[in-house]
Length: 395
Image (cartoon, rainbow, N blue to C red; front, side, top):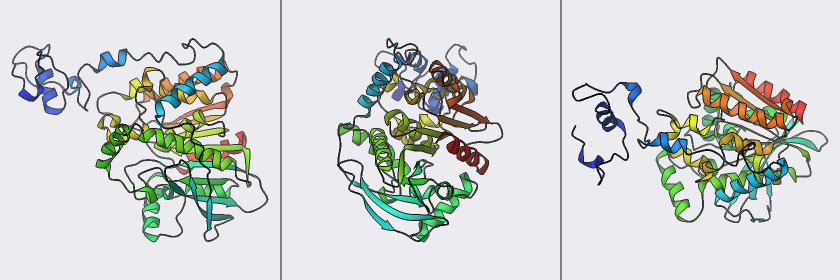
């Protein structure tokens, strides 16, 4: 069989194949000359190296609870968190004063609106939306973490109704209609008695917008500068949790992280990295890494995955292992069975791994997992109502 020149390896071995070239190569592998085109199920596709099964087999996650040499849970948590911190590539010792500036907005329905600008790191100031219920505090609070969605003109506005920009309001309403049953989740939480803080991640809203095609270059340039885009987001989220917990209006013992999609990833990650988070609710982002790295998965496209990529961490811990650092604190994970981003087997494998950790702490009832059979990648009103009820119970 003729191999196109760009795909030839100096030693005659295939090293990287995609698309039509993949079909040509695999059509001749093990089926004989002249056997015709490869079947769809035979194709690698999606930018995977053709030896990717061997790479996956080498991932044993040796620092996971139960296989780690650490037998004391607290010692394991310290070691696992330190390993995650190491792979963030962002200075964990940054104690830059928050130095918040507050600007009042128009009154909400039972709550006060404010813009807040804070220093989460020494590099730049970050603007967010802060909602405070009417009445006497201190109140429980939610760090509300926005999704990715390849929509960058709005970030915090996806979850908190903007009050000072009609263009963003139109975008935000469309987003809420598409994913949140027309609701602004942050405003709903504030009406129900929670202080709500939502900030833009780098690239969104006031810190953007980047374009979809710029993400990979942005991430690679962080790496070239000895840092990490995903690590910065993780560090900022943990610092934001500390800022929220330290507000006089907030009961520091009752702070939760809540997010959808990439925001869900951020929520369980923040709970793993910050003791300021007492509970976390993650909607539509949990899976096993090996089950996610399959042909056709969105992660294989690169780009948006760089916001959730800590190079080398997979040699030590899987996604559910990182989330389990938060055990035995209350955690909620929802998944839509029709969600094509996360194969069902990966979701269930991750859930079972986490259940084993919480059960080992005699706290199985504190881990709430649920699959919604009829739903896809959404955070609908019924899902929200169940999260709100759960937050009331655990906080």
